[in-house]
Length: 400
Image (cartoon, rainbow, N blue to C red; front, side):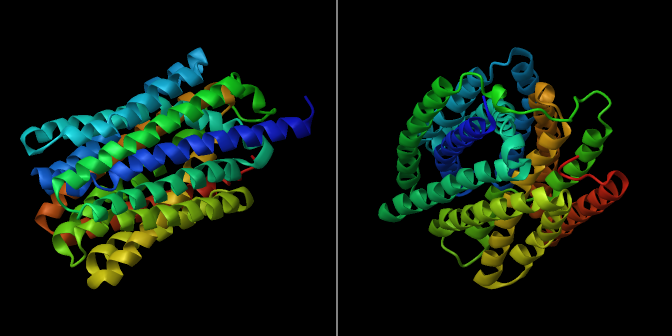
């Protein structure tokens, strides 16, 4: 197959993955935008909400070291995708049946949603990386991330409209929103089926590369050290949403709308920073971490609505930049035969650090809000210093 048809097929495949991401993020990010207020309405505390968020990320991320290895070992990328997406999305409409008397069930379903993501995430990242030789790793992951976050923009907006039409903050409004999101879960699985039929062997899309496996790959393991600090210091949105609901003049009904704003910014940041990564390499990630240092002090310490909105904007920039670049770096480091395994290791390290950070943030929030700010800034600053040392020692560039 000559280059042009191969590149065209890779682009179509990348778009299909993008639309799968768009619809799935419409579903689970729409739900995620109201997890905090929903759990609070059911009677959960800030510590329970933060711990659930962190534990969900830990389970979903830690599982990936196993599912990534399985994906590489069996090459059953599509099987992992179908199982993962089905669990990730189909539990969400079940939340419509949960009330305060069985609030623990909501915790279980939210955790299962993360398990589903843990099953399919390494396979999805590997599939996306197979197009990197045609477009550049930064652009491939940026396109996928932009469509992903466009769905994450529309999902919370949809939830906001549902809550607003149903007078918002009562439990029935939340339950209806979860139920309606099930429609988009089904649509995701339909597009996934089409992609599998059209591209049964997606690894054949990748051209030759000079990357290597994990054994002896010093650059990969040094990179994981920086990932730990990035994840620990980045505050999850349910905690931000909980703070908005109890400590600001903003009505809780606007929480999903603010999340929608963050996801729209996330999509734009992913495209910009993905392009920057292909041009400047790891310096793009360094810049995104530098931006993340300002999230907590602006969000929590600047009085009034302006501080909340500016904090959310910075949060969206940080999320978009990191979610596109973090995976693109690995695509440039590791061969396709071991790439799902590498993503599994990456996600496990990231998720473990995220869980620990979320737990500490929840505890610190209950003690003193200033401690949350100091902790978040300190972790991101250490991550920034680590990446600068990493760059100076290895001089990692996107075409290495």
